[in-house]
Length: 341
Image (cartoon, helix red, strand yellow):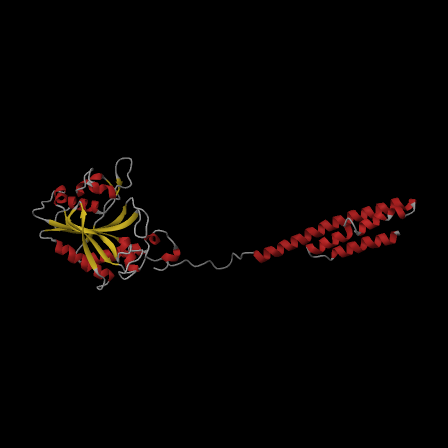
């Protein structure tokens, strides 16, 4: 090997490096010139011992200088290629923040609130007005005045979330009935829609928090026939005149006689399904004539006035009214469900 050959090899390597545009091509170039086995620079170094002694130092120095220059050029070229590849990747992944923003979805009334307002409107037709009371109640209004003393077994089904001072989250809207009779005198025609709390297991039809509407009518001459006629008319208005309604004898400490009100299951046509526990009926609520003890607790004379009372789950009404077969859908805030209303 002579000096001209050495210089030509180094020059060819430099020229080839200047045309490389990809990391793969750079890798191939590096193997060709700097590979351990057959690299061109290695071959040049191996020929030095074949040279005359007086040329070895000069040629060896020239090869090492050329090698260092090529390595520096290689690193610079590799940096440029990597930067260009990164820029190309960023251009492909760039998010154009100048695009128009997504439009906001239009709001709608929640099915529970829609059912609540519909019930208020229906009862207004029959002369009922709305009353309200606190969600945090004392024992007197929530239990004792409703003929449910401390040792009454009916408390077991409704004992719920208590506060350190002995008050509790109301378990029914009946507490508002007591407050209404304490502050007003007959004749009374009131409905009390609101949120209540109970220690219930979560199922298709039950939830520890739900919305309830209770009604109270206290006048002279009020009878069970008025109660049955009112609730039957209400169910037909809500669910259609062909929907069957039934009244089952029941027990509530604050009414006597008492009844459960059921409507024909709309999901199975009364044939039985998971939503109605395969009974063909869905319980709408309870009702009855106000117990004389309750009237006396609020200083009313049961010999002069009688009253009817009823309660229903607004969530349950929404389920039947809008074909919702699981009460949990009403509480999960899933947009895919809510956008249907």
